[in-house]
Each structure stands twice: as C-alpha cells, then as structure tokens.
Image (cartoon, rainbow, N blue to C red; front, side):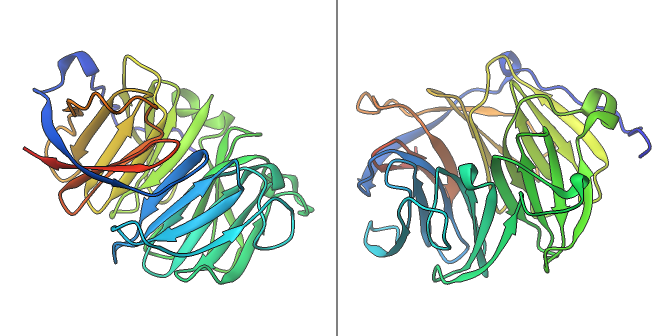
Length: 282
C-alpha cells in the first residue's frame, strides 16, 4: 500500500478553547461494571457489562427493554464484551476473549458473527478485538488488538483489507484502544494519547495529539466525544479546526470514574461503572 501524502494535523489539549459547561440532570441504569455504551439514532441505549457478561437495551428513561448474555462461548453469551456499537439496523458487540464480533439486530436478535480464530488465511485473522463499527455503506471495521491493526469486511463477512498495520509508516497503530466512525465514513482510532484518522479506503488523513492517554471515543451524528478517566472533550466534526473542547461538569458526585461519554440530542451522557449520568448544557 502506498504511504499517505496528506498532511497530518496536530491539536494540543493545551490550546483548547474555553470549557463548555454542563449541569447534572439525572441518572439511570444499574450495572455491576459497565464497559461501554452507545445510543442508536432512535434513542435506544445499549450497555455492556464485563462482570455479568451481559448486554442491556434501555430507553433514555432507564427502563430495561431487554438484555442478553451471561458467561460463555455460544451465541448470545460473552467473555468480556468490551465494546458495543449500534446504528438503526444493527448492534455489534466486541466479544474480546472469545475473539469474535457478534452482530445482532436492533432488538438483540442474533444475526451473524465475525470469528477471528477459525480463518485459514492469516491476514484475515484477528484476536482479542477491542472495538467494531459499521459504515453507512455496510462495511464493518474491527480493531484487532492482537495484531495492532484494523480489519475491514463487507456486509456478508468477506474480508476486504487491513488498515494501520506495519506498512503505514507514521500512521502505524501501536496501542489501539477504541474505534469510532463518522457520518462521512472516516475512522477515528484512539492509540495512546493520539487519535489516528483514516478514510473508508484506509488512507491516512491525519492525527490528533493529546497530552494525556485517552480511554474512549464516540461519534454520534457529527459530535465526537473523547475522554480520559476524569476528563471529557467534545468537538463538532463539521466545524473548522476540529478543536477538542474540554467539558466542565462541576459534578462532585461523579466519583466512580468515567468509562465512556457521548453527545446525543444536545445532552451529554456519561457512563460510569454503575450508571449513566445525563447532563444538559448551561
């Protein structure tokens, strides 16, 4: 693959604009040790719990619609469901220790699985997947932590290409953590204190460099939210500069640590190990 020729851009956290303020509104959910969450376009919330090995489907009032899971390796079972992605048609669960991605419909009915182990071609194998997302073209991208790369498959599970591998030069992934995808089908990958950006075809577009190691990244519509254990940053991907803006929550009760965060319909949703906290802009 040819090396990218696009100029990388660097945005330092020390140069962020003034903090955006949010105020606590309410909380919902009750989890043992939540690992990830996502909200689909209809406003349905999906949460994975790596203690119970379950996936919960809730509304934004906190009512549990349904849940699946429990420890195991059969379909509907999980061993460390480390990440979840949801759009209008599907839910992708990264079943880390089972080396697979389970795909469900929006009602958590099993549809298909991407099996990282039982593949004859070495280039197509993956292990301990940390994240998976789907483009609006139907392609699925899987973050392969064992081989530090992204694998791209089509809607039917056919392998297409790898992204971010050793042949990517300065855009080679080293410690990838989590994956997100924009409405323009660009991939954003947390790697230590950096966010690498690739287009739908694997061409490197740039990198955002931060001063702290990042933990989670979510893109809902045009809002990208990233966080560390105790700090949240947001940016609107349609705006010029893609500046990461720190969030001022002023919430002394947020003591259990931030797992993940996202913006949905103008409100900030923050996942902690035990609940989802909702904040409104001031």
